[in-house]
Length: 508
Image 1 (cartoon, rainbow, N blue to C red):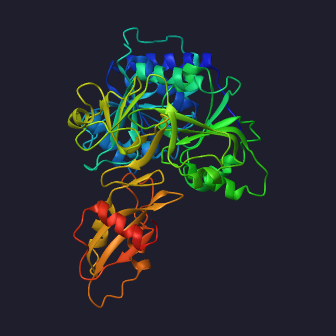
Image 2 (image 1 turned 90 degrees about the vertical axis):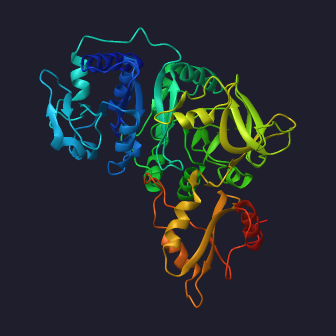
Image 3 (image 1 turned 120 degrees about the vertical axis):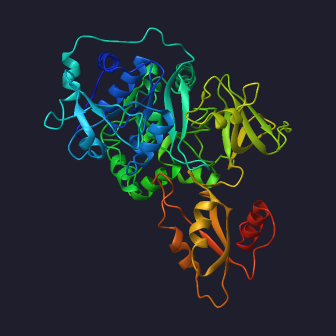
């Protein structure tokens, strides 16, 4: 395995020089800058450089989808700059190259005019190869001497944006702005929970976390693949190199990737790493038990785009895990469980999760109404998750409330399933509902009324939807079960239909 490395001194030096380049190009404090450079040393130098200017960094490389997501993010954030690779084969460069014009006296910067993104003014190239359009990014930075770190940055200022891969009901990207203070607070709290001897930390495959400087502030050695591929086979291939590279621990989200790797390494004895941190979904004892043998320890955290991190649970005995247990609160984090009227419920009762923490996001970029509705007047963030505080203080997380279906780490809105099914000539009525599953927590069931004499089968219904990608192109929408009803669906709420479907399938 080819390995490249960079010291903390080199990272800060190169990033501060890139910050000077950006400042000279006109980047202003507080504005949003997209970084689409593929996962690499160049990516991290560019990302930290943006933050050092006082601008707000938006990492979008993972979410590239034929230009659709990029266009939406630029327009919502009113961004004037995109940092990208100009290397041969770069989809991002191919998207802009016909409209780009070199800027006199600049090594990295080109001007651009794009009708679909009227605020966009300049592209900043971070090439690996000097044979591509522009110079070698790291080599040129190493030859420069002028550095910049904005002395006017305040703790409450925005540092980075966590771009969520799932779109909200308005079919727009969800962009959570994170302050410098929130990043520092989370770094201080989170890394104290892990033993100091663990230095090598592999991010696999959560690009969102790779976009934030937690480890740079904590002195932890970041280990990243030099090419970001999320399909399971790529995850497996990288996992084979864990021992060869002497990786001590890793973050891997979702847990299904752990199960995928273990299935293909079952002929090799584990554990493969000292510990694994995972999250991003509710957990059951079935999931945790299947992860046994992958690592000596397993950590589960309740975290998210808006909250960074709220709880942590250490698991040493994989046989002693209670369903949905997310552990104890991290320091300075508060959680309330409330009912539909926003009144706090007693311990042991299920309700909607509210969080108050120094690591909360500032709000949603380009969506002031969503920001206003998400926070209470006294600073609590309303999460769409359902949870419970046990009598012993442990936090249980059951997944998304409302209409959205949590299937593993994938959030599926029923309309994504119902619209394409209703377009079929043999389907009269349909509702998609969650039903319990020990591995995914929820599976998707389509309750269907078909036209009289239709020969439509369960497999026919699944085939209509299972080739459709979620908005953003990250995951396939999946139907696990199909129930056919005569004449019409029961006239009940979606929750009651979900309970009926579970009973009919023997899932409750």
